[in-house]
Image (cartoon, rainbow, N blue to C red):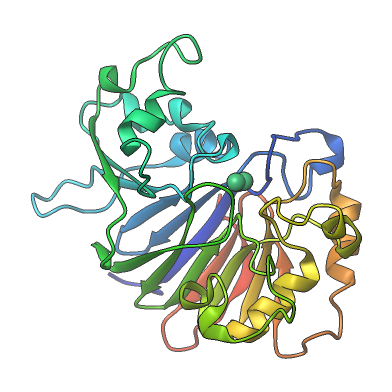
Length: 304
Ligand SMILES: [Zn+2]
Ligand SMILES: [Zn+2]
C-alpha cells in the first residue's frame, strides 16, 4: 500500500448518559459513545454502539479484510450495556446487509448471556426488529479472558470500576496503543487516588497508551456529589493518565448538561497540571492519527 500507513481513531459519539444535540453542543457533538478505529490496511473496530454509530454505519465502505478476499467483517466492542452505549445499535446499516458478518463482543455476566441481555432492548415493544431477525450474519460473544486478534489489532478487555459488568479495551496496533475507558471511576473506594498502579482499576488497560480515551464526565465540584455513579472528574483523568504513563488523554463521555463552553472551561482547568501529558476534548468526527515511526498523536480533521 502506498502513502502513509497508520491508524485513524474517529469519535462518532462523545456524549455520556443521554444524547444532547443542539446548538450548544455543536463543537463537540451530542451523540452518545461510539468510536471507530480503522487501520489503513482495512482492519476495523467499532467501540460501543451509542447513537453516533448511525452516521458511522452510513460512512463505512466495508469492514476488516477476510481470508476469502472479502472485506465484510465488522467487530463491535461493547464496554457494557447501559443504554447510552447500545442505543444506536439497531440503526447501524450493516446489520441489515446479508453480505456482512458482524461480531458483537461484550462483558460476560452471571445473569444472562450477551444475546439475552441485548435482546431486552432489541425486541418489541422497545424496538420493532428482533435480534434474531437481522439479515446480516450476526455473532455474539462474551469477551474472552485472553487477548483477541482482529486483523492487525490485538485487543485486551479488562473489567473496570463502573456499575454492572463493564470492561475497558486496550487495542495494540502496529502504530501505537489505544485505550478506551468511556465509563470508569478508578477513584472510587480509594483514599489516596492515584495509589498503587497494580491496584488501580483500568491501569493494565491504559498502561503506556499513546491515546487514552477516558470518561471525563464531571468537574471536581460535580464529582463530590456523584461519588459512586461510575464516572470521573477531569482532574482524576489527568491523575490516572499520569499514573498509567499515557501520552495523550482524550476527555470523553461528556455530561449532557455540559455545553461546548463548559467543556472548554474544563480543559482550561488542566493547564499546567501535568506538562508531560497532552489533553484534548473528544469531538465528533474529529479524528486522531497514529503513524508508525513517529507515533504522533494529534487531532486532525476527518478527510471529506
Ligand atoms: Zn455511559
Ligand atoms: Zn455506564
